[in-house]
Length: 185
Ligand code: F6R
Ligand code: ZN
Image: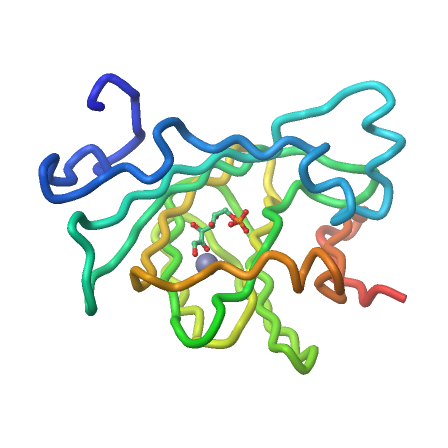
């Protein structure tokens, strides 16, 4: 288990108390999330870039009050005018989360089921609390890999289907004046 290189102090989990949920980092390629972008098809004709990869760990045996944790490397890149981003999800039922920036520059989009949006800039050492009920999608608005850690309650289910079906309602575009958040029509 230890021979797979996991960045940062996530190596310090206790071997017989934690299990690696993702045996290898999970890679998300553009093709896996094409519907999230306005213009994925034109890129996919030529290439299927790796957009991000992430590791997940859970306490073993789990139980009430435990925390799962993970790390994400979100690469720099564009799909048309849109920055590389994570798929984004709600947590089903209740369950907040904490994201901490490790490197790079990101914009975190937070969305309620009623369509209310909040954004937070995430750089090294920024901590963002994601309240229960808010969907979250990270966008890499910088030129280098954005790395962040995440901590969330064990036992929650990740609801990807809602975002896949309804979208996030907003896009983050690269413009001459910097990143711009625009409402989707
Ligand atoms: C866990 C969490 C993160 C993300 C990871 C990948 O609740 O929010 O660990 O899972 O950043 O993003 P998604 O899951 O949206 O593909
Ligand atoms: Zn989450």
